[in-house]
Each structure stands twice: as structure tokens, then as C-alpha cells.
Length: 280
Length: 280
DNA sequence: CGTTCCCTTGACACCGATCAACTCTGGTGG
DNA sequence: CCACCAGAGTTGATCGGTGTCAAGGGAACG
Image 1 (cartoon, rainbow over the protein chains, first blue to last red):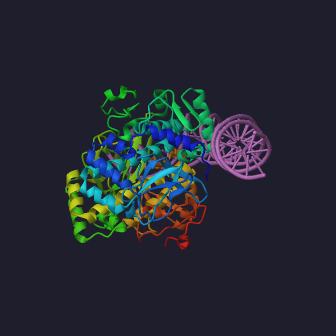
Image 2 (image 1 turned 45 degrees about the vertical axis):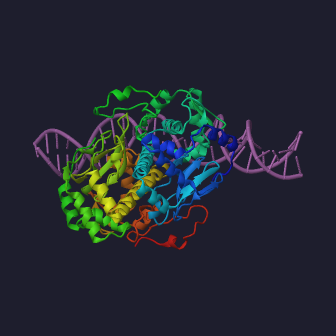
Image 3 (image 1 turned 90 degrees about the vertical axis):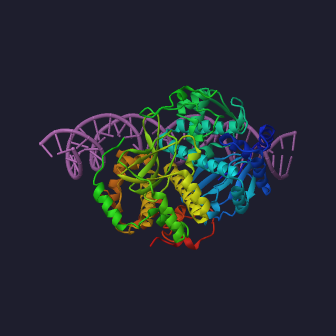
């Protein structure tokens, strides 16, 4: 499906310079207070860290999941294949993202995880995780919160693919990824790493690479983004978010990324003030 | 958006006759052994059972979730609204289905839940649930399994909307719902309750009601289904599943509904024998 | 017995898929 | 060091699946 890796080394280096030591801890703290002890305990899970090459599977579809996978560095994608050979990406996994908790309860994985860049993944033993969660309720709550956010993102993706046209889909994805990258410590207005190929974007959004290309051309022409050499710079986030109908609420970040555009859907729902808040 | 209810009483009655006392227990036992004590304990959660009328919200978008909701009887839908007024349904909730576990960890719900038929819902206090899960590890594991299955279904929906054409989407949805209804005790080849309007089907699949109608006409003409008066009979499940590319694996039911069509995607993945197994 | 959903049907428009080249870039090997 | 090569991006022409708009029919409820 894909294999090439281009400039990923430079890409890697630039990320390491900027990111906080543990992306997982950084991410969780956006949603949940975590004591330093809890944070340290989480770091202990990364004992068994392995490197997965660009384009290789971390876990394949139908394989029995015997570990929980935690992305330490690089980008990965959850995907499912159809019998006609097409692929649907159901999630992009960034540093700090985790595979399904307790996935070992299932006989076989219903999806694969593939490395989109050179990847560092921590393989966590389910027992160790379980033990940590019982001994440290704070960690347990934080990880459960993280799983809820994953699910919320998945719902947002379904909405995106089901109810928006191609242009809005791409824009919404870019908004989401930018918000998630900001949480990881990238500045809001600087170019951020963006290693996705147009084919991968298409596989995530239910579009063909050809059409993704056309949409990107348009977005560049409109001055919304600069996307070049695996770096993405969002020039006008507010306009992008407005056009995409993006609302950061579903990411459930507490104070970090404030909702950019909160739409009032139908009947008034209160929380009117927040609607005027724009992201930075 | 919708409000009418048609024939739901008859519909209700026929379901009660057939279903095991607790749909939740029935469902969980498909994935997990549950002792009788555990099952009884689960029933204890249904103390506070409320009725929600057809078309009303169980919980609205942006509301703070202060209960976990368990569907006792009737159908409901998770949905999100867009600012242009369109709606995307992200899940159909059948008896035994639960709202997100630990959703109370979130400040506000990122989606609403609406009753599609007259509904009986158990409002479970988060504390009571938490307590039950700590005191009964078996229950905890079963509920976590259930959450994983929910997520797997969500991924399957994304694949459906992202990568299949309208006809296959409808067929895939029907296959999934049939499998889930079978778990609830409906016979595989008998008509089963199916209260969805064509608009609701469209909102779940990213289609317009008009087009859903045309697809259904076609499926009827092809002898695949009989859908009439809120009853659905699948005439030729194998053919339906094959045309939809449906594989029941993602439902993670242990022995109940065997995979209908298991597709081999690209490279051989092993488990070759299972590929020939058809459902019933 | 009228009203209200919901379903149905037809004509037409358009977004995005498909097919097929061609370019550009970075990496590889002679 | 240069030539080649593979993968990604780009562009144009054409086609088809779905959306849209509009009108009418049928069943259940009050």
C-alpha cells in the first residue's frame, strides 16, 4: 500500500527537540490532574520500547492482541481493509496515543495498526497495566478518560465522513490534528510535522488521493494552509475552523485548546458565551 | 427532527414475549462468562428505570452526563448535529446497550441520545457502577468488553460510510442489526422488529432518505429482504452478507453469530479455514 | 375524517471517482 | 557524480452515483 519514507529523519529530530519528555503524560494532563508519582509510574510502562519501520504493521488485523501499544514517537494509523483492496483509516495515532485499553479481552483485533513514519512503540503487558490501574486510581481514571476521548474522536470522524463534503472533511481533519499537535507542544502558528501522504488522507476521509490533491490545491490557493515537505502550517485557523464546522469540544481538553467555533445546533442549549471564544 | 411513532405498541409487546429477562446480561454473556451472582448484581443497577417518549432526548449534546444510561427496552440513537441542521447518527442503541462507561469523567457530552421508539432506560449512578465494578471483577471485565465492542462497531461504521457505496452500506447495516437482534433472542430467519425510518437510516449512513428509499426498493426487488410495517425479515442472509462485505468478527460474539463472510484482504493472514464458514 | 408523518417516484444537477498521463523529488547504484 | 528509479504529487477529460427539488400517495392517530 505504501512504503516510502521521505525526510523522516529530519522530521524526527525536529520533533524530539520540541516535545515534552513523555507525550502520554503531557496528553493526559490536558484532561486530568496527574500527580508526579502517577506520571512517573506511567513512564515505567515504557520499558519494552520497540522500533517499527515505516509502512510496517505494529499489529495486524485478526491478530490476537497480547500487548497494549503506546506510541512513543512517530505517527501511526489504525486501519481496516476491505475485500476489494481498499483501506479505511479509522484513526491517526500520535505520540502519547494508546491502543484500546483492555484490548486483550478480545480474541482477535478487528483492525491493524501501521507505522506511517519510523515509529517507537512501547509494548505494555496487559497485566502490568491492570496492576498499575488498580494500585493508582488516578492513573486508571486518566487512562479511561483517554479512551473516552478516542471514542469521541471516532464519532467526530464518522460525522465528518458522513455529513461533510470533501473540502470540509480535509479542513476538519487538519483542525483536529493541529489541536492534537498543539497539545504535544507545537506552537499554534508554526509549521508542525505532518507526514501524511495524500493517499493516507484520502483513506482516512473516504476520498481518492486525486481528489484530496485538488482540495489541497484549493486550500493553498485560498491562503488557508502551507503544506510542503511534510510540514503543515495553518495560516488562518479561525477561518479554517469556521469553514470546517470544527469545534474542539469533542477533544475534551480542559484548558489547552479552547473551542474554536462552537455551533449552536437547533434549539438553544445554553453555554452561549463560549460560542464567541475563538482559539487564540 | 422526527417525532411520530407508529405501531410501537404492538412492536413492544412482541419483543417482550421473546426476549430474555435482562438484555444486558444476555448480551454480555455472548462475550463473557458471567456468574449468576454477577448477573443478579447487574440487574440491581436497573433500580431507577425511566420512560422516555419517542423522539425525546435521553441526554442532549453538551449536557453534563451525570448518569450512565442503560437501554432496557426500545431503540435509541446516538447522534451529533451540524450547524447546517443535518444530523449524523453514530450508533443505534438496542436493549442491553450502555452509554459510555465513565462518561461522567467528561465535562459535557459530545453527542445526544434520542429515543427512536418509546424507551425504557435505566439511569445508573456512576458511583454505584464504579462500586460494582470494583467489588465484582467479572462484571468489570464484561462491561469493559462491551465498551470495546461498541468502539469496534463504531470503526465498522466509519469503514461503511467511508468506503462502501449506498447499497452496500444499507446491506451492511442490516447485517449488523440482524446479528445484534439475534443475540437478543430473535430467530435468525423470522421477521424482527425494525422501527427505523428511512430518514434515520440515512442519517446513520450518510445518505439522503430519498436514496435510502431507492436502495431499499432494489433490495426488496432482489428478494433480499422483506421490510414492512416496522418488521424486517432477511431472506437470504448469506447473499446479503456477501454483497455487503459483512464479517461478524468485529462484533466479537464468542459462539453466537459466526462470521458470515470473512474476507481475505490482500496478503494471506492465516486463519484460512474460517474463511469458508458461513453463518448457519 | 382531516392531519401528519412517512414512503414513493421522477427529472435533473453536481460532486467526486476513474482513467491516464506527466512531473517532481529523493534515494540508489553504477 | 550522474543516471536511473520508485513513490508521491499534479493535472485534465469523462463518467456515474447521490443529492436536490418537487409532487403525490398511504397509513395511523386524534
